[in-house]
Image: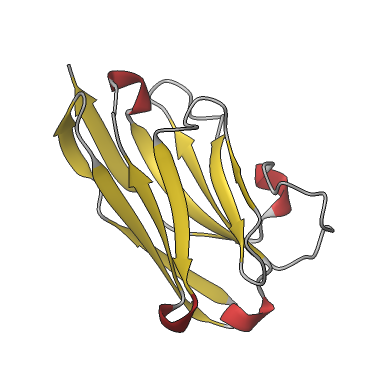
Length: 130
């Protein structure tokens, strides 16, 4: 079992920045990748992929909507994954979820589908005002 706790969300004005953190505990050695997803207001059935990173190599993937603005990183020693979000817009308003995948889907997998993840955090709200 892997337990994930997100933090760092909150209100911010358009153009501003936030850094989200996701602290993992439990059987963290069993996870192959960590990802960030978001769920926007009115889209409760959709969790949109934001970014993913593997624990054992540097392969990173981003959604097109956040490329160049968001940066995912990890601190293996702290079992923590970060999402640095810059140039935020109101369209980035959402609940942001951290997720861990316990399955190796191969080098070619971008881990961009929510179905590939086994563990989820409780989410942290990000609200961007114009």
